[in-house]
Amino acid sequence: MRLFFVRHGETAWNLERRYQGRTDVDLCAVGLVTARGIANALQGSQVALLLASPLRRARATAGLVGEALGGLPTVLDERLTEIDFGQWQGLTQQEVKARWPRALRLWKQAPQTMRFPGGESLCEALERLRDFLRHPPWEGRTVSGDVLVVTHAGPIRLAGLIAAHRPLAQFRQIAVDPGAVHAFEWFAGGGVRRVSLQ
Image 1: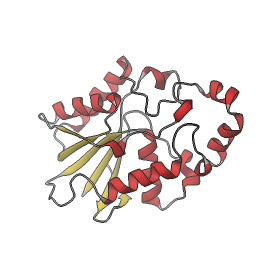
Image 2: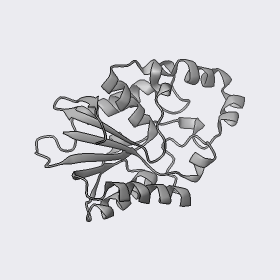
Image 3: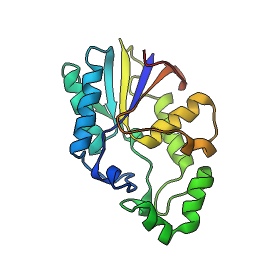
């Protein structure tokens, strides 16, 4: 079964380059345009199940996609929420550097060792995503088409690492732009591999 991971449209914090994490920021005007572009591109596709992170920026993107797919409802799943950046949430990189210079260096050079102050570790975020892949909302039922997941950069990067059997140390090497679609094939038991978008 094909599993498409889509990053939500932009928010004002994306444009200001602030750490968002679990902060529930709405899409901005640019993000609404991005979300409508995703929705238009997916019209006529074989998506049978639409899932999303419960954060507003993902829900809003999924809502527009669902409308374009003929009113397909969105199923929310907490496991698709962005990494919890804790006390970094709402701050720019310069603000983080001023308060946590050593932690920021770790995040850039050895992300697998990082626990965000007041937040979670990358290992914990990985386990959340692994749990989603092993025990997805469609477990025990047949899905007559593709599954589309609207989520955040963190979970999509983690899915890419799982699919490529790459270590967490390479987390920051995977680019995930707002609105980007990443295609995988999902296997029972939670395995994924990258496939073409065609």
